[in-house]
Image 1 (tube, rainbow, N blue to C red):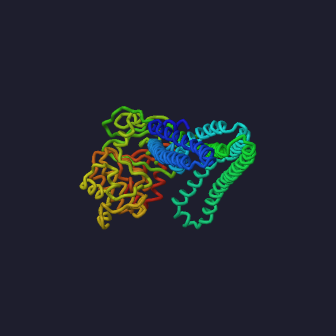
Image 2: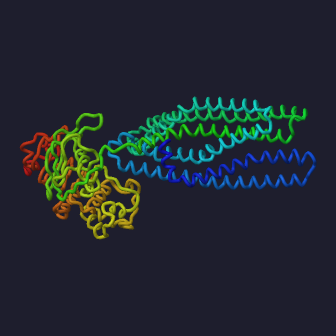
Image 3: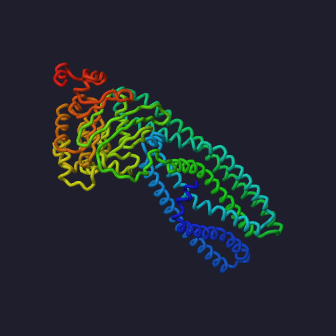
Length: 574
């Protein structure tokens, strides 16, 4: 909860005003029984209607002041809680933006979403309720005890016994329910994970007719969350009627004891009524504290989960201050292992020269995409170096590094918006002519202009309203708009037919000159014209050279080529 207190500091002034208003409201609530006592003892007893009207007017004014203080304080509480949650949500989002892929893998996307939404909502709820109750309840309770004792010390035991029972009840609820709160947040993570996987893999689920299996998997997560929530709610449900029972019994006892004292002329009727109201205020204050004991543990769990995100440093530190002017890329004895895993890359060494095309090919799982992730610094190398323009990537600011690279990921990702807004991701200041040129090079222009709104056509979330090939070409156009000195195509032609593939590569060779091109591909036809081909096998370099050279010197490459090309094609290109 210390992290929450830090976020409250900018709202200290507003919080002090809220506290002052709570003090006013509490004093108003504590003053009403006194006025009632005076009205009954002096006005009603002697039939002084003027005094009764006077007391009634005072009570009305006090009530209106208390109500006004309550409303204004509620406004401040809402503003503070909303402001803290806004700041916290923004910081969590910004922190996640700086995470490397290792941290994203550690937390999981679903858990990060839960922490950004559900967990922060728990803290916001606590603040709205807590600002009112944590300060108001102790003032009300302490003031109620003090005023009650001034009215009648003989009935102190009644209040003491009632408060003792309430404390025992709160303690019981605290011990039973609190351990379940952390479990609830973990189960929310789990149900979000299952739901997200199911939505992302809906086509696979339908293709294999595994809806029943997915339903049972979701139901298991749902039942666990439901049962845990039911347990907590049942414990909570016991508290309210029990509290009402204690309050009503306290009232009955006060009336019984007080009536005997009134008949014995030991106290006045007004004092007994005031004592009854003070005892209700005292018990109400403990009821408010009990509600806080319910909210605080769950919010504390949420605060700890948010703190964990905010205090997690990226494993790819952005501490570089160097500058690089060249576009040659050198991999020098690069090793890499995922956290708590074996090495997936070992002693990778090659240079991709400026103005040339370097291709990377290999069997599935050989480490091709991992190599590109290291170049983009989504992960850092475990050993060795990667240099761009002769400067180690780790010596460059991450933003400067990525500004140099036009990256087309293996999984084409478009964002909700328009074709134009997606292309402007490459360069927010790009002109219409630049976007049109990039679309032409990527062979996207034809299908863009075939749409009614052309570049202003809507793109749905994830680009689901365009085909896989169109999505891939738009991703390539987005990178070309960037006009970067280095382009990385991570298996970015896989969804294209051979004709479009060939035309697109020819356009890239013709229009993008002087840049360093790195192409990761599965198809031999996509890379056979590259000046240099790197062949990976089980995380090591199995071969390096041109297409013709590798057919003669690299068994792995030859095996891949023979599986894709005909004898005639092999003889023509060999």
